[in-house]
Image (cartoon, one colour):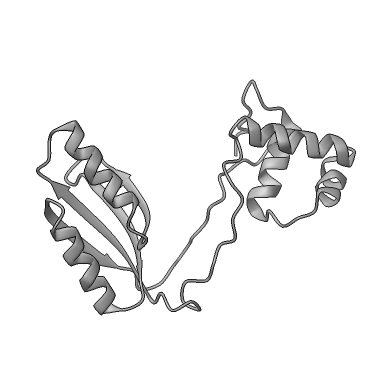
Length: 158
C-alpha cells in the first residue's frame, strides 16, 4: 500500500498513529521502544497529534452482544424537509438518539444512513416509532446477521 504521509506528519508520526489506532492501551514506553524515540519525545509527539486533531479521542470498544445489544441495523432514511433550519433540527434530534451509533448524510436515493444498536425487536420497533414522528418519509431497514469485518483502523501502513 502506498504511504500516506502529510506535509505536517513525518514517518514517526504516522507510525505512532498506526500503533495507537490498533490499541490505545499500549504504554508510552512501549511506543517509544517501537518508534525508537525517548519516552518524553514520544509523549510530546502524541500530545501534539492530539492538539492538532489527528487523534480525536481514545475510547474502549465494547462488545455489543455481551452487553445485550443483539440487534444491529443499518437504516436508510429519507425526509421531505428542505429548509436548512429544519434539517438542523432533525440532525440534532438524530445526534441525541443514543441508539444511533453512526449517522451519515448521503447523496443518492436516501438522505441519511444510520447504524443503530438495539437490544431486541421491541426496542427496534420503539426506535422506528420515534423516527416516524420526525418527518421521515421513507425508511429501509437491514438487519445485520453477522459481522464479516468491523474495524476502526485507517490504512496508514508505511
